[in-house]
Length: 169
Image (cartoon, rainbow, N blue to C red; front, top):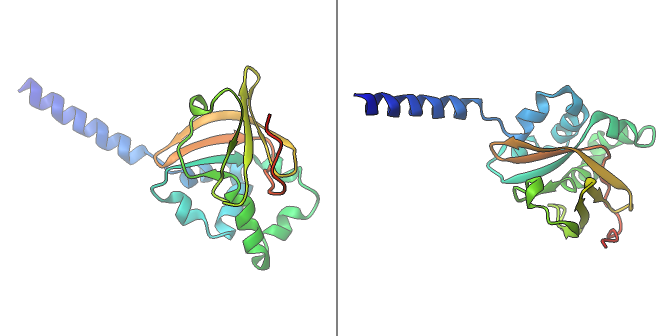
């Protein structure tokens, strides 16, 4: 009898965990610090994809990162006629693997985001994890490893922009 109760309790516990699991979009939508990112993901038509099975790693810029872009940039990107450009910027923040901070090797290494023609340079060291984008600017990972049922989110303090391949040394 005790074995049956243990199995039943385990099954209920697993069912409760599955019911509480959230995908990347649900986690971002539930956190006001990502409201600009969520609006952009919806405008680009990527919400369904990033809610899918994944796996995904999303380098998620905070609202303050979007606010730091030149005046009018976000509003321009959110216009329907700029959907392709917005999609490219957002896909530059997504890797099609689940990469926890512990999986990022020490030193500087190129990583290929979903935006296939581009590369990011991710540097992991004692000072944390930094990401160089196509403009040569650096974003800092300010919160790592927010686990979702379809991947992982790393919170960054800058919007990553495609451009030229960043130096990675």
